Length: 311
Image (cartoon, rainbow, N blue to C red):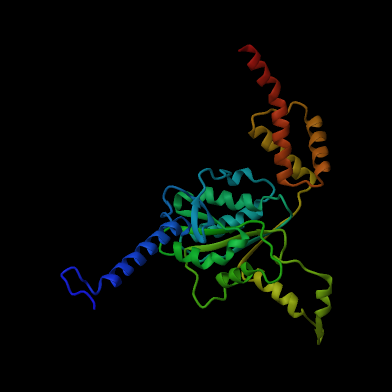
């Protein structure tokens, strides 16, 4: 017969079981908490001008670049016409006027990414900000656009050295953001992308076999049309070409002087610069910059050694 005394509490077993269950659930949450994504800090858009999109613990956030590349437009040689196009488009964008997404394509090392950094430095004081996004994170573009849309600043989403293989998820995400999603892209966001490929994807000889000729008109096959469709979504195409010998030497001379070295024997300098380019198989601005650093460092080294000995 069950007890009916004052200490008897028919609901006690249920209460004890519920309390034990809650304690176990609380302990489980304590163990899981380190693995759960935390609240991302608010990006400091007034303090920093450049950011990288990074995914951490399955959550994306904007990470500020504390030491951005401070290159100026005047430092870029041999790309005057390209610089004018990018500068004009960016100025329109900063002033709230219609502007285009930009695809910069062509020879490697000719200043494509440097030009984007240069216009950032020029217009940062007027509210321009840059967000660098890696190819594998392009699927997060809608999230990035939604994050910055309410801001008063103007944002360039920068994709450097971009190229795709077939069926990569970032390919479709970029197409949708540029033109093709049911949602309109925020008017304070543009995409600037650089690539060595005009159409951002590899092109194969067998794809030309799909081309048809109808009444003397050329109709590319579906594979080619699909590859062209992405690059066509960029409103402005800017092409870069390999430098000739004179341009390469001019760039090398410019940077050597910028690094504080006077060229005493121009013939010897010219021979060294051309040999350097020959060993690299390229006469690009990047190769000229690398040679200039080597030449300036070797030229300044004896003076540095002398000052140390004097101490």
